[in-house]
Amino acid sequence: MASQDPTLSTNHPFYDVARHGILQVAGDDRQGRRIFTFSCCRLPPLHQLNHQRLLEYLKYTLDQHVENDYTIIYFHYGLSSQNKPSLGWLQNAYKEFDRKYKKNLKALYVVHPTSFIKALWSIFKPLISHKFGKKVTYCSSLRELREHLQCDQLLIPPEVIRYDEKLQNLHKGQLPPPAKTPPPRPPLPTQQFGVSLQYLKDKNQGELIPPVLRWTVTYLREKGLHTEGLFRRSASAQIVHQVQRLYDQGKPVNFDDYGDMHVPAVILKTFLRELPQPLLTFQAYEQILGITNVESSLRVTHCRLILRSLPEHNYTILRYLMGFLHEVSLESISNKMTSSNLACVFGLNLIWPSQGVASLSALVPLNLFTELLIEYYDTVFSTQEAPGEHVQTTVEMEQAGPVTKGFTKTGTPQASPYLPRFRIP
Image (cartoon, rainbow, N blue to C red; front, side, top):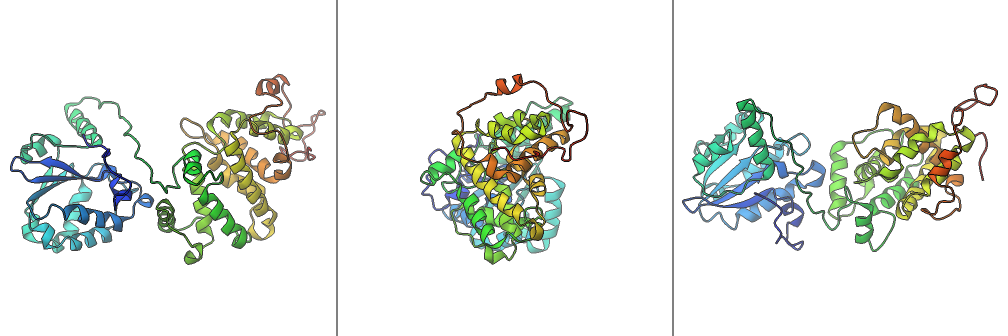
């Protein structure tokens, strides 16, 4: 079965592409022709792969073998809107692979083709020579592939094998076997998105604030505080993917080049959302949901108690981020982003459940908690015991007994349904 090459070195000239295992040498057929596999299930999301680099890597790899006859197997399973190259890239790729590459290509097998592939073929048919077209063979199953290929051993991605088994079971009227999660791919040494805070700390000389967070906050603090709808409005998905890719490859990013203040804002939110574990941690989720059961005047104190359970690293990053968002809220007259508006944007980027997604009912306490952190930043993050050193445990908090939510002792509704009536020192 295909897997990450254990011998692949980070010094490989195309390590950023090769690590995904998209293109692999899968052995030789019975005629001794080298077999290459291209696996769409190994294509990462668009923002994690530079497709020009992919094209260069394909040529780099094939250059070592094209002087002899060879075969390519294209495993179509796994291609989606999240990782699909553009039609322009496909057209350019066909032009880049000139006669040197096509001459000794004896066969191109397309495994598990879909209507998309056939429609794509009809689009590019005018550009494809008749001679090359005769080399293409569609295979609806792995068994059919083996019949054509006559290969004793063939390295096939496990995802493709499971998909093929699912198709065969469906044809037989059987339930497919349970899906298995493929093993994670190793991150780049310069990876910024989708990796743990500890990984970022280790790769950045012990720096606690992740580079992407510091860069975006610094830029927005200097130039974006008065931008209307900051963090609420979207940015071009293509540009966001491009910036993510640059950061992951360790390349510099100049936000001035994009002329859109919402690009760094979206990048900041994306960084938080793609953390393997939320900044506020899975462990704090249930405690945060209980914030609406706490009397209004005690909620800021309750926030402080919850934050004491955070790892010191998470607490430091949270304090840095909330300090900046507090600054943004102070300019709400111009940017229209009050602490409440910011909380609606950031709530689910800071905390989410370990299983499934947050329910609609969970949004109220999650956003409320976030709003308190922003609105009462100076009080919540004032000098206190180090995170992890509890003065009052959760059990003690629960033993304090139930509280009446949203009403005074006389039953009269309070002026604010959740904000403290005074600041707690």
